[in-house]
Length: 258
Image (cartoon, rainbow, N blue to C red; front, side):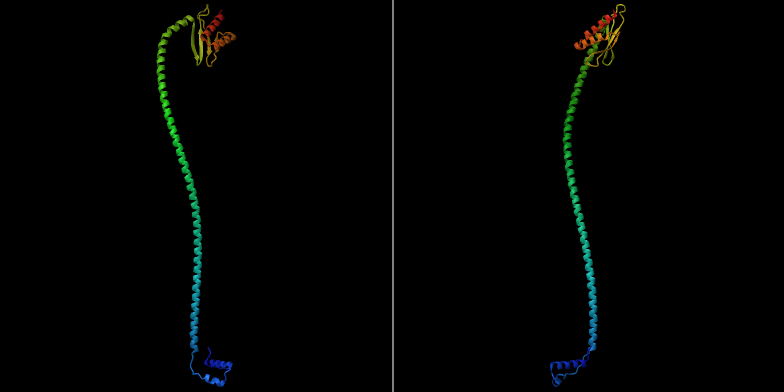
């Protein structure tokens, strides 16, 4: 810090520069003497400068800390914002999935309702059909019962008639020399005798095939010429006269025994 002497010298140089003479400034420089403690002022200024520098450093540190904290908060806010954006996107996707699932479930519900309607209609139709079938079964059972009763009555009549026919049949068999036997299903055997004067008990037989509409002779004992049998069978199939057929076969056997 400058001393009082240097200040006085500075004042003298100021007057010289301004054109004021020495005689003129003798009165101006006649100032009262005072003591100015520049050292104390310097110490105070140095103390103030130190405190000010410390304040600036502290404030700079605080500002730096606040800026770092702010930047950290900004980064965390951005991170939270990104997280929220991700959450929003996730829930948007979930919303679309839920909407799609709702649409699918709605479609399934509609299909189920349609199926229930169809099944209900089908059930009603089947119920009507079942009632018709039950009614038809009942009618059929009644008809069968009626037929059974009629058959039972016919069987009773046939038994009575059979008991009456047996003696008559035996009489005609003995006098006509003819009887019938069942060989198997749809095959009938006709047996003739009383044809040969030398042996009235000798039997002649022919087996008639009834499996089709046209009659056929499957066996003949004793054997007759095939042409004779074919002619007799042809006339039988044409006329459907079984009595005539038996008569012609009997005559054919009789002629063969002569």
